[in-house]
Image 1 (cartoon, rainbow, N blue to C red):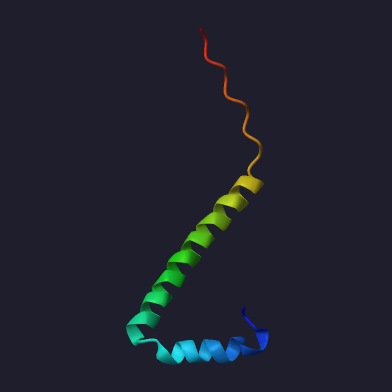
Image 2: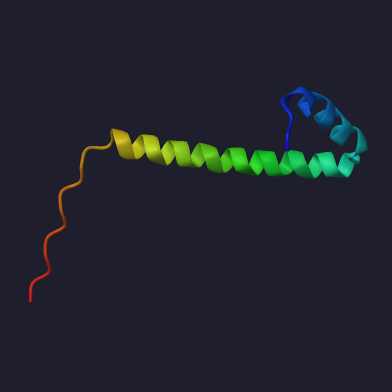
Length: 61
């Protein structure tokens, strides 16, 4: 169970045992996730701002 009063202490303990390479990998993962989040936000915004596309014509038989 995560107890709120220990979160800051536990986070500092975790950071203190990480190697610099671990921190570098975490930073790279965070950057990659923020890039994907930015792309997702841009796509969502563009979709919301774009007028509704007309329905595609039905194929002829």
